[in-house]
Amino acid sequence: MSFEQPKIESGIKKESKAKVEIEDGYEQFIPVEFRNDPFGYFEREGRNIKSGEIKYDENGRITEDPTAVKDLPPWQDQNGKLLEVVARRVNIEKGEIKKSGDPFYEYKIIKLVRSLGLPAARPIARAELGRNYLIVMEKIKGVRWSEKDKLNLRERGYSDEDIEDLKRQAQERMEKLRQRFEAAGIERGWKLKDMVFDIDIERRRIINIIPTDWERTKINQERVQKYRKKLQID
Image 1 (cartoon, rainbow, N blue to C red):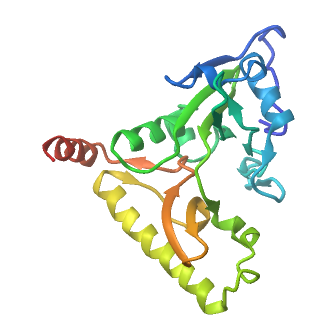
Image 2 (image 1 turned 90 degrees about the vertical axis):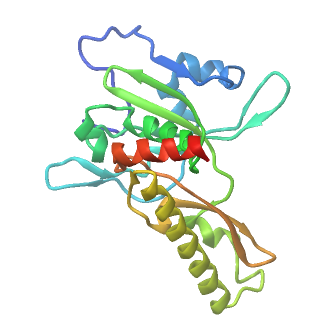
Image 3 (image 1 turned 60 degrees about the vertical axis):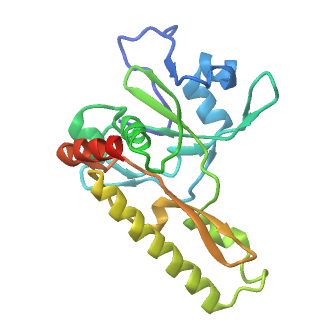
């Protein structure tokens, strides 16, 4: 299956329209262009978050696709309020998505994580057409670790030691977050490249950290239920 461009499979009429589901509170933000053609909008208006080439495994399945996650133009409601969003074209052959057979597995994980009071992007909408799937989330405030060079830290007076200390802070925060997630029954990989960081440049410290990329996340239902009960008690 190619992820270069969404293709309408045989048996689906050309005039078929994508099914779009929107979370409560976001109806007024969704552009008409997205409602009518979410996949076309994603390709036309989206800007790749990551650079590089598409990578395949030995069976020809896509393992890394920098064209699959894009920042979309800010959306605006009737009152002029802006909403910054990011969208992901779902790879149904990847991680727990493939194992579960649910193309919206990652989307549902995000909703579960937030229901447990843990940090994740706000889910906004999801779309499907044939065997093509798209999820949209609110863009997290901060910078992806892969983009930290754009902060021009050295030009801002950071030394090698300052940058290394910033990395140490990030790793410490990530470890604390890992412990919280595992206590709640949410099991995932923890790498700096999969996090978004809110950085206080002037004070040289990490303010906040929020994970992204949930397609390989596993759920321990027993621990989730125990954690829910604990939340109710507290």
